[in-house]
Image 1 (cartoon, one colour):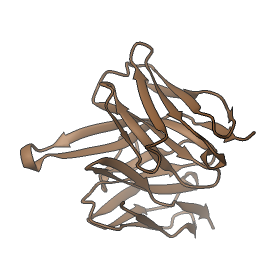
Image 2: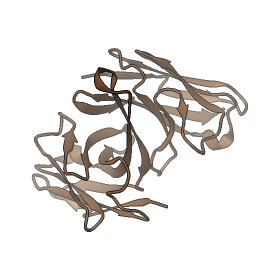
Image 3: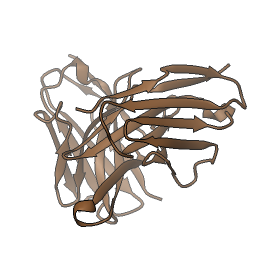
Length: 130
Length: 109
């Protein structure tokens, strides 16, 4: 079955760029109607959606992070990646990659789009500290 | 931005109890609301999508309802393995954006 695995440095210095990769195994990242997303969770706190990418390269970001976030995809490696620039201690969190199941109902002006996070990686802790 | 208010923040119940968690949106979100279960040290798991649809493989004691601004998540008969934190998640499409509720930590009494 399809599995997701995050990888990347567990420690990043303040003002530097956090870089993580999510490797998709057990299936092609290009198959099906899926987006691919990053979500984070500071210790003891709730979940924050960072953004998503389609395999075409089309992206959507959380406005609160948009100026610092880049999500990219490499279909040849079956991976997608997150870069978060100018990090501070507030960016310390467990970072999850997730598959976004997406489907449409109706057509024309009655078209509605639906999505949810149906498969998650185990998460990776990134600490921002000097 | 759409704000989600989830309540209660914590809940203690006995095995076999009916448990209810609510989520209120700051504006009409139709049925664009999903529910997740997160056990300690684990990633969240999808339980309910589009307010009331049970994800494949999820036990039928879990259910969801609601539309517009008010949503309810119910466990009909609490089991010991249901101890977890539960999150609601709203999503929008214009532009695509998502926000989670603050979470409800469920404990056994």
